[in-house]
Length: 169
Image (cartoon, rainbow, N blue to C red):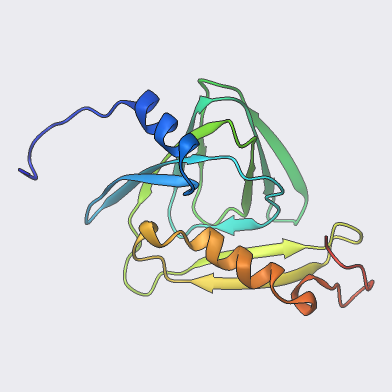
């Protein structure tokens, strides 16, 4: 295929393919400078993701509660309705929470050599940090979110709060 070809993508067909498949996302493109993908919601998403670059999210279908943490550590929620768009600045801990039948388009800068994405979980009881994972995300086809989820939920020690003893479900 000609890399300079301008081929429009059909988001309706893409969301239908994701809905009928087993992968939670589909990469639309990955270039030297940018990446775009469509993702469906995940049941029980609870981690906060920290990107090394700015991120733009557009709600194709459904609504999203975008949990985020302020520099002071306070958790807040921005509600993005279907058809809405939001800019998430680099370095902002955020947790996009939306139903499995909802879809978001995400556009961000491709990771540079040495940049790492970070994933945090916090205790639902006392709000202390439970666990942190870090990854260099060179290819979104690898689905790094599913990888860190398996790591977090695969070990009870990762889900047990060292401050209050609560075990995240």
